[in-house]
Image (cartoon, rainbow, N blue to C red; front, side, top):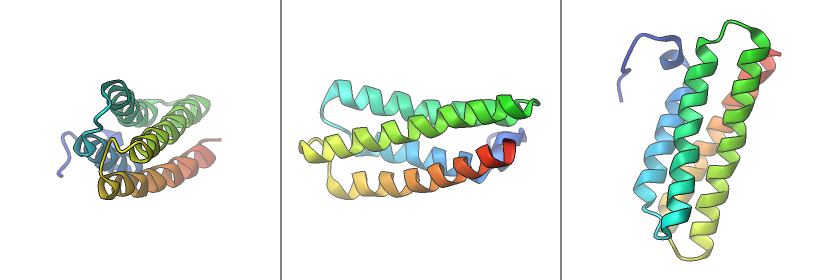
Length: 116
């Protein structure tokens, strides 16, 4: 997917991976409506928090917003795992999402350390 704008978040690998994670969560088509909504809201929040953090000028502000995104990443993985355990989504889609989440988590950890 190409960049939508020339704003700073578009250049972050974490944002690119977060977009891929959002697509995976959407494509997982989690059968439980409440769990699907929770997973999608968390995945969207990751993208939005990364974008917000990239736009912040204060180092502590950047770290705080990236930490929120990292927490949301764990929530998405939890939702995908629960959906998989309860038969509410296909294993391949859940595992692909988890792989993107692993990358997002690692990249956010680096951004937090760099911002601290």
